[in-house]
Image (cartoon, rainbow, N blue to C red; front, side):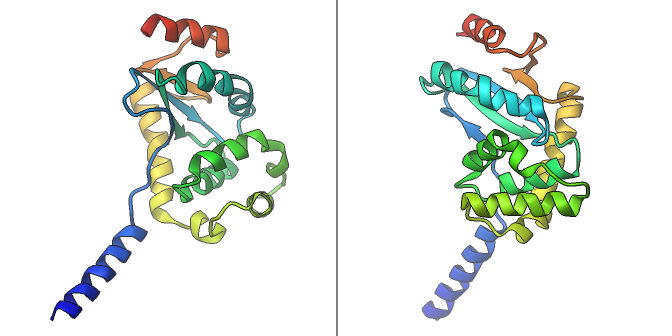
Length: 191
């Protein structure tokens, strides 16, 4: 009887772990006083610029010292961004690394005239980088798909997001021009 119960628990745990809810891609301490939400599209050149030129300085000055936590939320603007979002969200242990890799190498994978060509280039990029995901499974995962779409719906509904990147700081939309100087001034006032 104990053996049967153990098998049942093992199967239940296995089943539940494979159906676990998607987790937000974040950087920083959960206890940070300031929370930034960044609504982004993985095919957006301005979002890639944010990751290359603003986020590293933000990380150094505010995130690493524990003052700020940032949540990256999905707001795909096209099918390629939608599929890339699903890929970034797929491996919870590597999500931030994958997201940063996709933005920092955007021109390496965002090629193609059709969704199929774009997916093929995305798959080649993921394989070349050695990320540990099952590409087809991730692209077709309905729970991840719903998670990504819900981010977009919530962004539009709660914060009137209509372009990317859109930055929300402690639940208020950042309305200034998005550069490090403006972001830094705003954050310093909140500390």
